[in-house]
Amino acid sequence: MKSVTIHQMDEQLARRIEDEARNRGTSMNKVIKTLLAQSLGMKPSAEGAHRATFSEFCGVWSSDEASEFSSRVADLERVDAEDWR
Image (cartoon, rainbow, N blue to C red; front, side, top):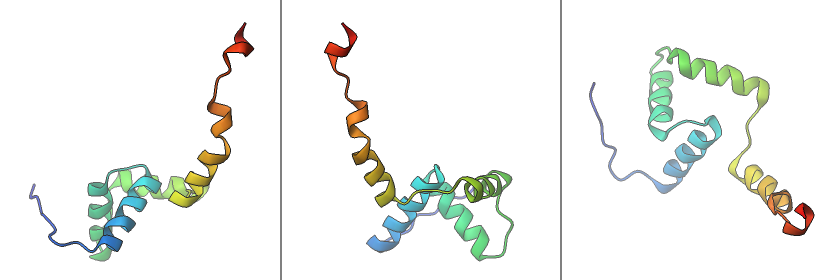
């Protein structure tokens, strides 16, 4: 298989790819390959299609939504040693 390097990628594009990878729970490399295949009218891999179908039913959070959720449940992650005596 060939490898490709993308030079001087726009920061906004790089962030969008990173966000998409995070939302899909996969690597940036897989996201880029899937997006390229889709844009060229090629069928995405079975794994990519499965993930897309799965996310349709479960939904995904944006990075802002995930951050907000984490901040709201932060107290639930704290363990008070006195509670265990």
